[in-house]
Amino acid sequence: MPPKSKKRRIAKQMHVEITWKGDSLGTINGETYFTSACIDRYNGESLRLKQHDVIAVNDRDAAKKQPNLALINLFWEKQDGSKWMEIRYFMNAHELPPSLKKKAKIRATKDDKFIVETTTIDELPIAEALYVESLEEFTCNMLYSTLTSSLTQLEQNDDGRASRSFVYSHRLKLKSFQNSESNKMAIAPEDIEQQLQTACDQLQLSSIPEKLIGREDERRQIYRTVHDAIQDGRGDPVYISGLPGMGKTATVKEIIGSLERLRDKQQLPDFAWIEVNGLHMPKPDMAYSIIWKALEKHQFSSKTFNPKKARECLHALFSKSSASRPVLVLLLDEMDFMLAGKNTVLYNLLEWQSMATSKLVLIGIANIMDLPERLPPKLRSRFGVHRIAFRSYTHVQIEAILTQRLSSLRVFEPHAIDLVAKSLAHQSGDIRKALMVCKAAAENALRRYLETKTNGIVTAKDVEIAQTSMSQSPLTLRLKHCSSIECIFLLALYRELKMHGVSSAFFDAIATRVETLGKTAGLTRIPTYKELEHVREELCRSDILRVLKQGTTPSNPNLSLTFSHEELQDAFGNHPIGRTMLWT
Ligand SMILES: Nc1ncnc2c1ncn2[C@@H]1O[C@H](COP(=O)(O)OP(=O)(O)OP(=O)(O)O)[C@@H](O)[C@H]1O
Ligand SMILES: [Mg+2]
Image (tube, rainbow, N blue to C red; front, side):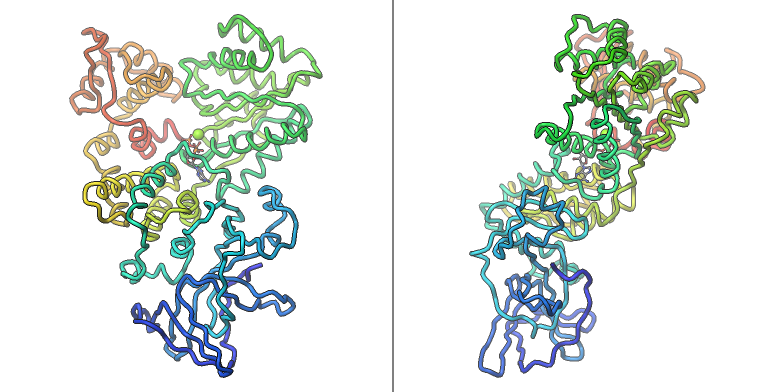
């Protein structure tokens, strides 16, 4: 096990002489850095060490016979003349925490050749290096993050070890090293394009890693509650809240996936799950039809999907006791958008859920933390028990998530990732935005590389450019400052597009949706049709909306947005009115 804390130790009085090889990297705070050193022992042995070599060092735990393996980050000489090295430990796979071993299907053998990289850094006197080890005979295809207690699978024959050193090192992150030639990550030219392309793919929002860093506590709570509810055939609803990009949906879906695997191994009773997204429904009562239609796939048959009929069918189904019917886990994502009208849908779902016969488990997700308080008292009490609020991601978590996604690639300068993590943690802690900034920066670098065949590394400068262009284009600025009525109009259009999976919507449909949305958002006054026409004209003048020729009539134009859905979400996530009405 790598030592837990980074305790400095006094160099042992050993009979050795250490000399530097090669030029120094420079002096920072009175300490001079090197990439290579030689240890000459007085028995005549000599040991040459280089940056990124794997070495053996004695474990501090004297009882442990095996030395630890570690990777050298770099060397330095202190002002008092003592010579040090920064290292990153490996550990034996059988020493991993039992839960991780179980998940990664690592059997409890004591195979000393099966090791994992860790993120634990230490500083030792150079004299403590025992010998240089080749990893050829070892299996090492996982990274154990001691910070987040997670395992990341590395590529087979992964050679990104050196670049990961830059990510996890403390010393290599010193600002003065960022531009040092010797620290530039060398990638074969033929690999650069491929690596940049892979980085863009891995940064996509749709690519969800198996392990979600930084959500361990929330995951544990939700997992336990839903697992027990499936086991017992009933349980109280779970309500999850948090601002956009906090990993709510991703965490719940990952949990459901894990529970499905348990079910498939017959370690959990049979269950089915259905996702209903409030944002994708024109009217809340569509939920009945969606659920009934989805249930049909799970062996219940019906010919009608009319909401009223579907509600009656569902009521009949849930009121009847059945030992053979599987538990139904119902995920109500973007649940705040189901709160239009008299909340009858939510009321009915909660009512059914409380029936002993229903075998219904509800998981609600929304951005509003106090949503239960906004419900009528009868509904409020039902949502009271399991409430989990997702907090913003911290700088360290954002850095770890981005590094996890890019772990086998060497196209991001560590300082670039650090910059995204710091600025996003400072602004909103929104990981979606962090991924979008990194992806835009990687796309920039790829474009540049394809044009010039040089500069294939994503630098801090690329990140700054991506951040500026995402936050300060005239359009984004205009969006950020739009009025509440414009904000609602655009969100109504946005939902029309999302719901029908199209790129344009008619004014009349948007106007109808504005009415529902206004009620949901608790607007004191719903804008009139005339007012909405003015808003539409103004938004067209500002180049936010475009009128398409196709299908357009003078009174009912066909409208589309002039920018991506992500840009809209992004601008409204920080919009003073939009945010209060929609996200909080
Ligand atoms: N811990 C994490 N590790 C890796 N990727 C993550 C993590 N959390 C979130 N993501 C990624 O960020 C994206 C946004 O996460 P998610 O959709 O779960 O956010 P959300 O909290 O549901 O936001 P919204 O309220 O807008 O729906 C997802 O595509 C997911 O891949
Ligand atoms: Mg979500």
